[in-house]
Length: 282
Image (cartoon, rainbow, N blue to C red; front, top):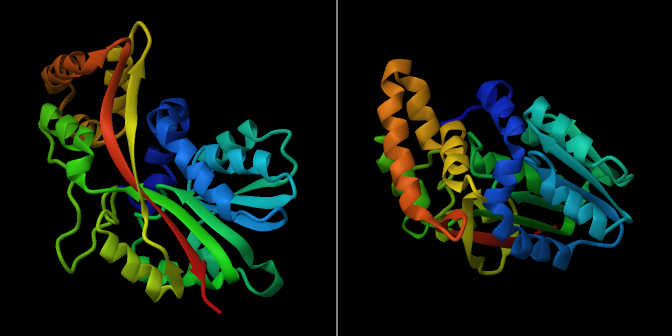
């Protein structure tokens, strides 16, 4: 699983180079997530985008709340560079390359935030309970926290099917009583709620959103999807780990699988995510 050093290096570079494809894959989730964030975002004050990536979510909020000062934080300097370039002209938006937990721990008093939010950026903490305590301390009492995370693997067949097609191990949620950072680490809502409560948050029931995970589109949808999965995800890790001479058959299996998924000029998969909205305690 990607660690902090990899986000600051190889993996961060890859995501920065492929931000357009990554945003395309999440495009159908953007509407519900942006709406959930906007529903609790104040007209003024301060907001924090945790694991901001290439900036798509904070850019949407900055445009919707021009009086709200927004800071996006990500481990990857490369992703922050992309986000800054995309956000040119938005005076209420700033980006920092930093560890968001360290950033939160350094936030006190009048510097605290009225809102913290994240698109799929909270499932990778080494110590999630400590991370949510730090985030809770960086938010004013009564301030809001909104984040999305993948629902159960069974509701996200793209992850398993791509891994199986490539011959990789399918992603899985952590075992009962355990925690492994990764895309499906927060797929169990009871586990996620427990972490929020440890962080001093109170949360309503999460919103379950079914959406279309788009991996490729246009005349070359299959080739675009094949390229995407060679760059990001379980197939990419498998390909990177094997000898170059052995990669051809894996790519061909993936291409055949993706061709079966192509319909009306797009390669898509059903996907599902939780959107959590919580409030920080006093």
